[in-house]
Length: 103
Length: 166
Image 1 (cartoon, each protein chain N blue to C red):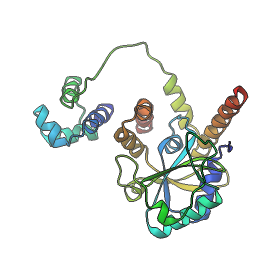
Image 2 (cartoon, each protein chain N blue to C red; image 1 turned 135 degrees about the vertical axis):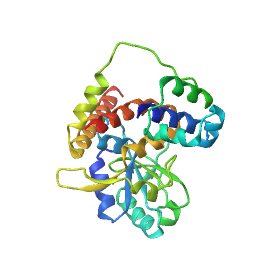
Image 3 (cartoon, each protein chain N blue to C red; image 1 turned 90 degrees about the vertical axis):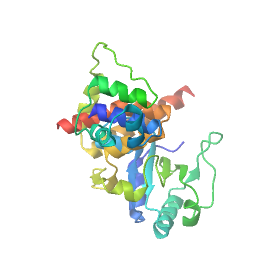
């Protein structure tokens, strides 16, 4: 899923169709489509190659895991849509009050 | 500055019978992404009758054009024909900032977005509005390609992965 989204982002940012990217990378347009839709996961090597064909470099590295975002996502997903919007409203109002206090 | 009240804003649109889809950061939030955004983005159906209803709702919301120079906004003549003359409008209302985007980046507008939208309950008293799918929010932010859009893509994708696991 993530590799497909990255591939599609690179292709669209380059303004290429799947056929055009396929031509640049020597791959079939249908294969590009399957990778983008997540029907098949591209290998890391293939993903780097395709992103490069679109004119970008894919930077991959290893860092210490940060589960902060994941914790926030899971907490948000556990709320109902109405609660999520209420939480957002509270956060924005608090931010606005802070800005007003600081002038 | 108007106090941010997205529910009141959406309720006014619904009460005027406006057909629209919530898009952007608020849509992402409603779908479960812990984004913080200070404006409500909507994509209305571009039919003339719908834009006229939207214009009437905007008048009730005291909508003004949002500008960097004037945080309270600049008054402008609001009617359906005027709204159809631009692809997007950035407004400040009595309940906070409202962006109207007839054709969000990477989409073909209302008809394109409403296909995968769902009616979600956004208030304790049961107000329901159509909310774009997280995939469509991601698609639009990818297409927009602005720094602020790219910055939130990892969070949105991770939320989508979590939804996929659920």
